[in-house]
Each structure stands twice: as C-alpha cells, then as structure tokens.
Image 1 (cartoon, chains in turn cyan, brown):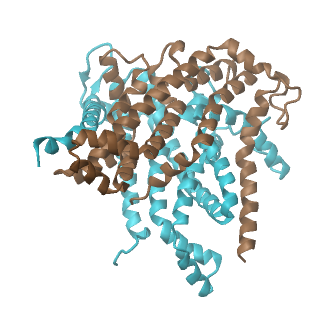
Image 2 (tube, rainbow over the protein chains, first blue to last red):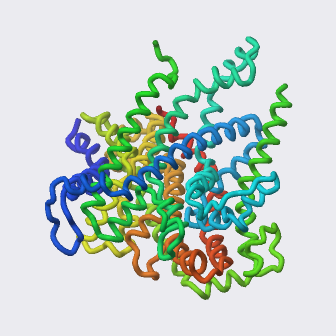
Image 3 (cartoon, rainbow over the protein chains, first blue to last red):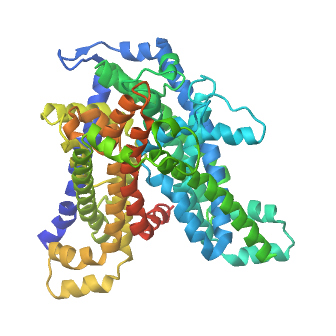
Length: 298
Length: 275
C-alpha cells in the first residue's frame, strides 16, 4: 500500500474529526467545566464548586419543568407510536391508492413548527377553536386547551400527533418487508387478524418500533419549539405565568440566553443529558426482552 | 376477505385524510378571510380577503426573510451534502484500523441531545465574533452530520466494487476515484441529504432564536415568531396577518415535498435498514 493510500481514509474523515472536536467533544468538556462555575459572559467565569447542581434540586422551576417534560413524553411517545402503527397498517392494506394518503399524512411534517404552532393556537382555542367545535358535535364541552393549566400539555400532545407522518412512513417500509409467507402460514392456521398482528407483524417490525421509541423519546425530552412559540417570547401569556407549559429546554434556554446564567444552564444541560442517558439505558435493557431479531438463537 | 380488508383500510384512510388535511384547509381559508371572520371556522373564505397577503408584505420585510431563508437553507444543505459525502466515502470505501469504533462514535453522536451543546457552541461563536450573524446557522454543516454520513455510507456500500477496481487499474488516485466515480454514482443519495437538510434548515427556529438579533438577518420562522408576537398572541389581534405569513412560510416546503417526495421516503427508509 502506498503512502497516499494509507493516508487517504484520514483525509476523507478529517472534516468529521475536526467537527467532532469543535462542535461535540470540545463543547461537552467546556460545558462540564462551566457547570461548576458562575458565568454571565461579562465577567470571567468563577468557580463555585457544586453550587449549580445543588441549586437544581432546590429550584422549584426545575422540578416543574422536568415534571412537565416527563408528562409530555409519557403521553406523546406511546400515542405517536400507536397512531403511526395504525396509519401504516391502513396504508399497507390500501395498496396503490395508499400513495396519495401517504403524501397527505407527510405534509404536516414539512410544515415549519412556528407556522404549526400559530395555527394550532387558533384550532385549540377553547371558545372559537375548530377542535372544540368537533367535540361539540358529539356532545362534549371541550376544555380551554391553550389557557387551562390542566389542559395545556394534553393540547400540545394532541397537536404533536399531527406530525405522526414520518414515523408512519418508517413503519410502512418495515411492514412491506415482512415476508408474505408468514401471513399465509398464519392464515392457514386460522389465526385471527389480531393474532396475526400480535404474533407475526409485531415481532417482525419490533426492531423498527424499538428504534423509533428511542429516537422519539430523546426528541420529546427536548421539546421546545411549539410550546415556546405558543406561550413564550415577547407576549406574556397565561400559561407562561403559571408555568404549565414550561418544558425543561425552555427553562434552560431562558436561563442561558435570557438571564445569561451560562454556568447554571450548563449544569441543567448535563442533568438533562444524564436523565436522557438513564431513560435510554432502561429502554435498551427492556428491548432485550421485547425485541425480536431475525436469525437470533435463544 | 382481502377486498373487505382493503375497503376498511380505505375508509380509515379517508377519515385520517380529513383529520390531517383539515388544519391545512383551515389555515389557507382563514388567511383569506377578513378580520371579523377569521375565527368563524367556515371552510370557504367569505368575504374573500386576499389583501391580507399584501398587508403582511407591507407590515414586515417578508422578502428579506425569504431571501435569508433561501440563502441559509441552501448553504446548510450544500455544506451538509458535500461534507457528509466525503466522510461517508472514507468509511465505506477505505479500510483502516479503528474504522468500526470510529463509525460507532459517529452513530453515537446521533443520540446526543442537542440541548447539551447549545450553550458552549454559542460561546464558541461568540468568542470568534460571529454569534450575531447567520454563519452559525449553516457553518457547522461543513463538518458532516452523523445521520447523513450513515445514509450516504449506505449508498456508497451499495455501489458495485468493479467500477472502483476499474478506476484503480486505470491509475486513478483516491481523490479522483471519489470525485469522478463515486460522487456521480451517489447522486440520488446526495439529493436525499440535500432535501432533508433544506427542510431542516428552513423550518428551524431554535438556532435563529439564539443567534439572530437584527430583523434584517431573520429567517422566515424567526420572522414569523415576531409576527405572531406583534399581530397575534397578546398583540394587535390581527390574526389574518399571522396566518398569511404562516402560509408564506409553509408553501415552499409543500412544493419541495411534492417535487422530491421519493427522496424523502428513501431517506426515511434508509434510516433503519441496518439495525
């Protein structure tokens, strides 16, 4: 092997290696160090030991924000997964006609979240919103989704389901790869549609479901844009005052770029990192029991 | 049995289509209503008020924001596509010690929550004096991005090795093999990356919120947030203006998807091929 050939791979990899140092590894170390300091960007950072981490446990807003975020995640992820599975199954059965519907289901994913948030502020409005109109047809009186502290987060979850299309398309691809012989065999054995789903479909796509659960959970724990657009910014809203839509990253953002408390925000970021790592680790452990891998020997 | 299943599926999809399509219909319709009728939830805009789109044009520098969004979006997409292709090719077509480990590290960064590096990366841009410019919105893409590296690596791995052997026999060096053989063959994969990143840069709010201070530098989503604060929520209650601006921000992405749908689907499908 010539010298150029030996050096070539590192040449190709160099952009990523540089980027990893400058935008991932370096920043993480800087952030770790900052989390033990007080730093407002105007005066030099001052070492304060574990003060920031101790404050995390006594700051009531951190508890509120973490609670709100977990609440959102626990509702959003399972609903998103189930709805995506249902829609993907429908698309799979619809055959060629499914294409048009697939396009329509994906369009919300293309909508900028800011536009989506502005739109849903009005659709979710308790008095004039179309969503409560529809509930009214069935005799329900809909809540004040955008102002009632008890209903703000369910409203955001409802809204988040509108962008289920990307997960549904991933599931559709996974469903298409399930060998048809498996269904034929199950049908010959007289398995009901539910049993076919439970014992053929679900095991065959469990790897994909697992992947989307992890990715969706990590994203949900960092939920920011929609809630920020709807309730924060220059306009002071009811929900901003009562903290019912204060999600963890919103509070982190406020601490960092509003109050310039870079040290405290860094400690918040590391705490979030640990929470996410812990939840992901639990999911990975659980997956060993629940996920079926093709060709695996047990 | 089969046809009944298909009928039920189609019926279910029609219900879903109404539920998922209705908000779009509502948005477009309401953006064309006058102030008194914005909240009437009627499907058709009566009276018809297209002047909302003229008014929003007059009230805010919409054209500047569109221009900024296009510039930032294209810069982000081109940078991500080229740099990720270079890195992906290194992983796919070259053998070297530690390749598996390093690729594992690339994949691991996909799981890293972006919120963790938000503050220190801002401080870096601040240190080099670029924290209030548009540069941080796209320049990080010059260094490759994990998901796109993964995606393009799949494309390069799928290319027949004979063409590379032939290039070698012809005496082409590693760089020429990459630019004249690999890149042209991987074009569909690069289009996937380009459209994904264009969408992601166009729709992003969090970076513009952190970095952009002057309205003349705003991208569309950042501008739209200002429009919402001023004309909608707690502002002058001119929601028809907010909705017209929302339509302007959304339409380019709808067009992008309709033109490049198969690339979006391909990207989503590749996402989980290798688990």
